[in-house]
Image (tube, rainbow, N blue to C red):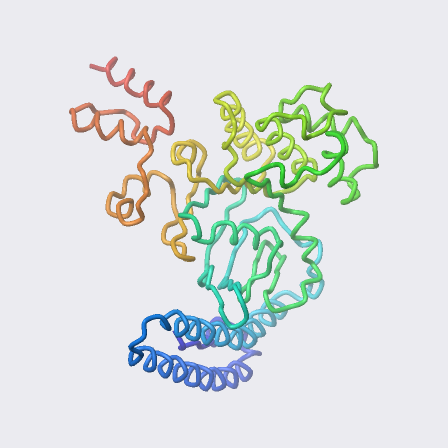
Length: 385
């Protein structure tokens, strides 16, 4: 901390003189805020009244917040101009979104409970969300999962860093004229569907977004029916109030209303909550269809480890605002040391596989995602004996 420096070698030679000046200024910023940090820390250590400890912690965090904001102005200036020098057409960033991976660079996010009392929710997030993959974001309550998805969706802005997708860039400290472009690419389905249902009837609910985005004309019931069928809801529900539906039906309707916006990336917050077994089976099939047939990116926030194992291509595990693991689910759940450290429960399928291995059974597939797959693997192993 307090050691910010811009690496000249990473950027265009045309920016060398600017970077040299900025690095001198960054040295002063580093020194100033380090001294402030040490001063607060010294006072805190000499303070006998521990009731004031939270005050000192807030002061140190506020100092860190101000430090990052100052550094961001310089670093993002270099990054943005380096991008523009590399590609002149990016003077106009609009409509340059491509079907590529979404990169998040140096993302920091603070929120304030009250003035001068910041909370550091996301800490220097640097990650890639791959296209045509299902990425599951995991973590305990308060780890920053929802905040991260809201940043991707353009609902909130981070204090530092930027998002990159193809030739589309969104910087934290700029007036983002292309925020609507980002929002039109992402669709978020809340954990509680009642939070996003507001229309008088189901047809209006499905058409509200597409009409606003000028994808279809008002009262295009054929379009609404198309998405109603996609989520396996009966046609005769079109004129019914959304609030007359069951919890599972509301979840399907919320999904239909987002899919109707023709989003490229779908974010699902605890999507299997409130669904019966049949509904969960349908949901897993829908996720697979969106990924493989419709070439969409799916991002899921979930605590249900058995569900996660079945659908995840990649897991990103957040702990205290940092990504502490990113990779395939099997490498996570089979890492006993990391699982124990993070307090993660092991999925039922992997528990059963481990128990069978202890009994001496050798399976032909150690990457079973469901009980059904495990049963088939056991059957094949027995048949080979």
